[in-house]
Length: 270
Ligand SMILES: Nc1ncnc2c1ncn2[C@@H]1O[C@H](COP(=O)(O)OP(=O)(O)O)[C@@H](O)[C@H]1O
Ligand SMILES: [Mg+2]
Image (tube, rainbow, N blue to C red; front, side, top):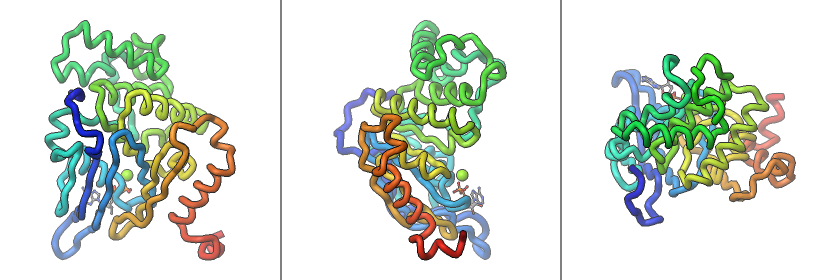
């Protein structure tokens, strides 16, 4: 699954000249154009940009749920489909997507089951993961007995079940209230640090992107492309105090300006 040794320099994701065009030749939709992006092993990268700028399309290409029109895409040095077969990544999208007739532990264990892991080992691993997302006491519960935040934590635990070196998360916290969302962000940083997984994370929230990421990739639509990349220099230093620090606000402003233009250009919108 994940234990094959790799040179540490092998990036989790490498996209070069990536294009994705939908639709007929006479009315093409250029969902992605000239996408060049590298996500290092263990790096946390957020994609941010208005609706329709191609964030989900890019995630679907990385996850091998769709194929590019042109360009190359490598996941840990292999094609996206080889990486999928190797279970190099776990996916958590906006809807938790749990199976309602399965308990929390059974949901978490599903990828292991599909991978043919023996029952006892599955259970042990599912319990470990439930503990990691603070759901030890809820292993026997069913999804409709849980809050939205708890369901999302189950989905994240499930995404981690095969110990992926890459987590793909498309607006995973979009449906959560602000307090749950901040708790989930703190938890996600801890989990990513603990497992050493690289994360590609889609969000509409500038503060969320800055809080979580090593780099924020800013995209714009029609055609969907990368317009800016903002480095976030906080490393592992992301305690709760960070959200109130001047350095944090400075980075939030930098991303906001990359997204909307500098203050002078923005004055008219207010
Ligand atoms: N399967 C598809 N068929 C046709 N057009 C699509 C398809 N998927 C996405 N698009 C179009 O590609 C563009 C990017 O969509 P998407 O990646 O979902 O954007 P985002 O996630 O940033 O909101 C949009 O114009 C969308 O309508
Ligand atoms: Mg989307």
